[in-house]
Length: 428
Ligand code: KE4
Image (cartoon, rainbow, N blue to C red; front, side, top):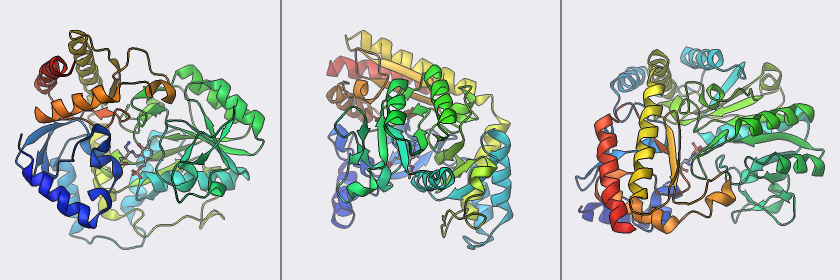
């Protein structure tokens, strides 16, 4: 494939945008190559500025569950913009989308819209702290919840690790209230409660997508729920990625566990910038202007984004049978990749729930971030490059998740497996 125009575009971009990208993962650094610049998308496909076409398994990191240029969503956006782009005042579409989401989630009696997943999680944590009257929070190593300061932490030293900043620019004072636990390890959570009587909330990706694809064990989630209830800590499910992707009710449609708060993003904007956080009324009513916990946003509940999200959700509700198809395709794809890798002696761990899937270049099961880190990232990079050159666009990091959309056909799945067989032969 020719990439001369992408290379030129990347050089120009780097002169005026740090790293040439508006979000780091897009720079392809973890796969050691230069990013391709996108001209457009259509259905299951992305087209780059050199005229190359790719099957898109990233779908803008999750939002595009109906693929690119979905007619229903496009029509809703075009209709909405004819009434104006933004008002900074309440509109009825915000209420309608809020009603729809509240009706779908037992945990969500009220919800507030924001403009990104980061904003949703940052606001949810502030609200949980304000509601609980406590300061400490617990997150899990390997889970990503956006880039707000108190969540940019890495494990410090010692058994129970209070977070230390994982990025310059984050003062230690802003991470000293963040405790780190190990995913799927309830003992590490109990240790946090033994070390702090001031835990306001625990935030978790119930199906982790940011350490690679690592679903939580149901027993672990149930024990987490019980611990939060016992210690009066708010349990927050960060479903920015898994929401409407794992099932119509996200992880809450997969596990029999009800959190106290939920954060959303991606799919609920249909491709437009939307995040949201919701929970029980007694928590949400603490939020300004009803309560004392401050939170705000100029473009929160933007009507165009709301219409895009509404169109996306209405279509998902109307076609909820699609989730079975998504899962069948995700499982067929990952099993096909595993078998093809096996033929060339390459071990692959695979997983799929609903329209989410993942695979690790690893001979052992991956249950947490430490396991994930033992994966062969060089092999992943070679796989990613080989598939890209054959027209298949996978997430550019071993520690991300792949997605099936409604436009990915069985034939495309077969073509992907066939291409992977050739790539595994080359890279083994
Ligand atoms: P945004 O601020 O990027 O909209 O959402 C942050 C966020 C919060 N919670 C979860 C579970 C998430 O997955 C994300 C963002 N996901 C990444 C993909 N792993 C976004 C891609 C990027 O950073 O460019």
